[in-house]
Image 1 (cartoon, helix red, strand yellow):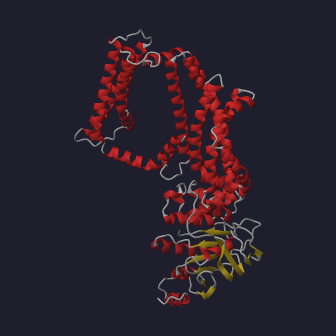
Image 2 (cartoon, chains in turn yellow, brown; image 1 turned 90 degrees about the vertical axis):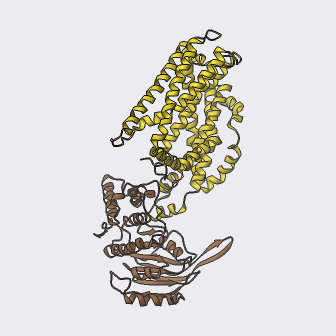
Image 3 (tube, one colour; image 1 turned 30 degrees about the horizontal axis):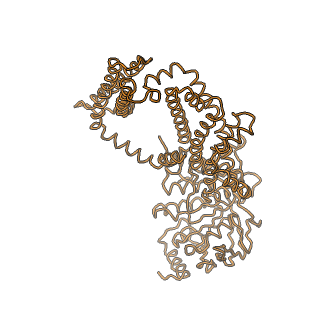
Length: 361
Length: 272
């Protein structure tokens, strides 16, 4: 939770520096690109070498889907080669003597940026494969080779997909409900003294309690495990949203209210058109923290009571000692959580485009 | 900023006199500071005639801005009464608009939407015809302060002078009877300040609203105002009134202004 908060703060404070760094890199593209081109070449070779190992160094056991792993490696080798060749040709164009400098297409530059990662992945995945499949240095059921993960995605796709959709629906209900509640509570505490008097102590007492502590009670009180989980997720996400919305509303520059009041604004205008937009940057910090909290409650709730979703899938895979399925589920979970955080970042960038330094033209 | 015309005739039903008459009668005010009463205004009485340009001059922190907040209706005095056109001032009203020292533009709104704040808050644009009228008034106000090209910019993209012009347009779009200015050019560089003073005088001459202008700059007060009211240190009392009949447009080196300047500085206890 706190990591997400700092992540967000880093994003907002470092954006200008990042932009500066980007401009800097743009200015001296040529010298650095030579290095990146070599890396692209190395990545191609590494993927090809990895493919050769898969092809000609037999595993101790007969793993299905080794062929698919081979194909994947060859595709990534081809990708690295295409990036390298594309960048090399663009480079050649721009450094030809007697010709005006042609600006390198930005897309190739972005792809070229990713080549160190392609190289690292090639080495990492091949090493992983060698120690699990070819040498079996790592104990067998707990450490699955990469082809086993591919196997899970091929064989167990329907179950994984339905788990993802169940998790997503549960999360969406809980998070949307919690974020809305937290937002309304935060605005009312920040705005109204009476509401603050009554809700603030409740928030202080209940808020810091981990939502998972309610788990046994919730499953008892609610008619279904689904509604109980929605409640828990909503509870977990509402608290940070409420606190940060409240703090945002409370710290609005009072001169904004003076201006609006002299221009004839009614209280509803002061809340909707002054307090809330001014508090929005802070609200988004709360939304990020709430989203992080909601992930952990989601998985716990699915492990404990809900009979579907990724948390349940993990539990189920553990029951069958299907460790490759667990790795696959973890990977899917990571992609889902990171995708949702990215989505929230996009929404924030759009809504807060007015903020200095965030503006992208 | 060359062509100057009144933005629009006042909407029907509103008092159509161009300038408001402001009466401040025996007003005293104090703040509570750590449990102690801190007097800021001491028995202040003054009148602003319709269409008059009155400058309130005094040392920084003497309580002039407090008086403006009372006139604007943002605060109520501890003692005394304030009237606008004979009616008691009980709260803020868009006919008496304030321009603060900081532009306080809303950073999440474009310049155009900032200028349109008043009509929006007064719900003037709820019908289609109303929206059109508001749009025209906003455009006219932007034109008036020379910001038409920056209508879609965000406040952080403006210079200090441009932001203060936008704040002025945001006030003018309401077609005010009284413009209350609280050291509006205090944070601008000196060249921009001189230009803005001239523009303000031209706007006032065209629209003929009344103006209450707080400043601690003697030269500025004498350049813009019909009448300069000099305040003491806190708690603010009126120590002198200087009438300035010099015709507009004025020149800063006009010997009459120079003589008045000496007089005012003497009233403030400064012999420069």
